[in-house]
Length: 194
Image (cartoon, rainbow, N blue to C red; front, top):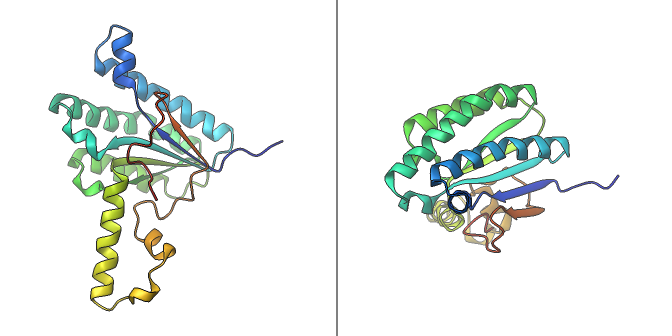
């Protein structure tokens, strides 16, 4: 049997457009998207994908209407609570990548709780890219490296690809083997640029 990809990354996109085509509001689209995540995670685990990274909330998403952002945050917290037992039962380890300290406290607390409770699980590693942007990730990595060079922690000559990788939000993830954008558009939208 042919082995599938080790690391699948998905840009979860098009929920609002899908809802509009169905004659529904954007909220319905986001709720349907949350249901789809469960199916995706189950299928990835069944197919023995080792890493699944979901572009859940972009740094650009903060510019959406305040009510929509609030709903997305509540939906995230509710999904973490609702799916917690499934993660434990299915040996799935949750982690998150992005500027996590900028998330609302309720989201951060729930996320930290689930990450802590699943950290010893040895199956699929499910990474949520939250408040994530590839350009921001690279910028933060360059700042951290520049600080270390300035303070003689590392020498400029020693900065290489592995140094950069060690300073990324995604440092614990392998290279992506398959990237999927659910809306069918063909662009990467500032996702996992490294």
